[in-house]
Length: 298
Image (spheres, rainbow, N blue to C red):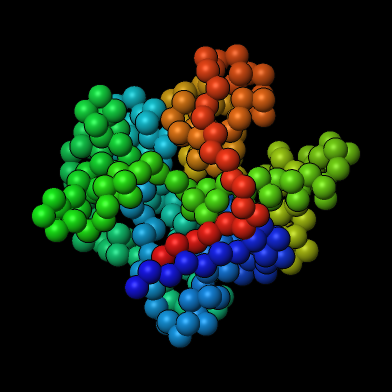
C-alpha cells in the first residue's frame, strides 16, 4: 500500500525546535533530514503503525553517497565506507532512532544486521566503485540484485535513479527554505562574532548558527556541546571528499546538490562561490520546484 504525506516548508520550520530537542544535536545534515522524518513519524503513528523498516546503512556499506564518484581507487573507497559505518551512531542512526521514537514508533534497520554487514564488507570493493563507463552508478551492486526482468520489484526509472539524500529527496524547496529562514533570523554581525560565542565547532553558516542557538537553549552544558561531531562536509561526506576533489572545498554544504559535476541538478551557477565558478565549465542543470510544499513518499 503506497502512501504520500505532504508538508510545507513552514510546517518543517515550526517543528525544528522539537526536532533539536529530541535528536540532541546541532549537526546541520542531521537536522535537515530529521525534521521530515519527525513529521513523517507523527503521521505514521497516527495511522496506527507501530514499527517501520528503514534503509539506514546502505549508503555507508555500498558507497552510495555522491562523493564516492570521486573515490580514486577501491582501497580508498573501502576505508571510507568503514569510517562511515563506524560513525553511523552520530548521524543516520541517531536520526532514525530519535526522530521515530519521539512519537513512540520503532524503526528497524535490516541493512545493519551484523551478518549482512560482514557479508557485504567482505565483497571486493571493486564492485562498489562507481564506474559510469561501465554503467555503474551509486550502489550499483545492490540495485542489480533487485533487477528482475520477469518479476520486477521496482520500475527501472526508480531502481536506477540517482541518489538523493533524504533532505534533498523530499523536495529542494525544503533546504532552500531553511536557508532563507536562517538568513532572516541571523545577522551578519552575529556571524562575525560566532567564533567568540561558540568557540567549539563554530557555526560557518547562518543555518548552522540558528540550530546552535536552539541547541544550547535546551542543552547549555559543555559536556552536551562536545557530543556533537563537527568538521567540513560536502554531500554527507567526511573531509575525504575535499581530498578527492579540491574543487568542492569552496562549496562546503551537506546537500547532495553540492556534489558539483555529479549531481544532475546541482546548485545554480550564480549561487556558487567564485572559487567554484572558476572551475566549472558549464552551468549545471536545475530542477525547478514550483510547489510550496515538499512530499514524502513511502
